[in-house]
Amino acid sequence: MDDRIMALTVAVVDDDAKQTEYLTGLVNEWADSRRMAVDVRGYKNAEAFLFDYEDRQCDLLLLDIEMEGINGMELAKKLRAKGDNLPIVFITGFADYMSEGYDVEALHYLLKPLDCEKFGRVLDRYADRRGSTDEELVAETENGSMHIRVSDIMYAEAFGRSSRLYMSDGKKTDCRAGIGELRAELPASDFVSCHRSYIVNLRYVRTVNRTELTLDDGSVVLISRRLYGEVCRAFAAYYTSKKGGVE
Image (cartoon, rainbow, N blue to C red; front, top):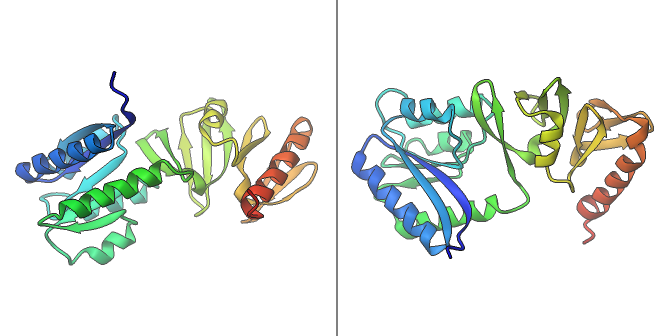
């Protein structure tokens, strides 16, 4: 029986078909070495990727920069402008864009011809990070799927059958998941339901009183009387284990 774990979807965007085939082979070899299930999809340009990305989520993007039409850096900026934290590895023959790669928070920047061992180490680092506590949430929005770093969510608010996420950088993201569905996807050790309409990330809570929470940015979130005790216990447990440094 195949005991592979952690299925991973990787997109390769490169206008060179041979390079796409080569990268696909390297990713499959790496996944085999880690006993990991992987689905690698190749795209000949940024436009083709964006069209598909509206409906099909992706865990990691391997991205060439010099392409006709929308180049790789422009694609990365489009994703970041929407608040999408999809991990990106730039693989290019040009070093000139390296500073811009930092601007879009690329996971790594690799130069062609590709060093296979270094490429493997980059994938290892990504896989290890993905399996750590700094998880990502794939949120379905009106603009398609978005990768959102869970640790960046300050709190969530119910809007009918949908939810709004309030981020640490001040941005807001509306997603189609209801507040109950969202609660099930967020780590119980870091988030608490303080009201039937609100879920709060405990790392951003500054003060707690009987009727409301105050967050680090000054935002105020209501606490229901029924959930007050649970919120206090969760806040104390989080403060002890995470902020107090006690295992």
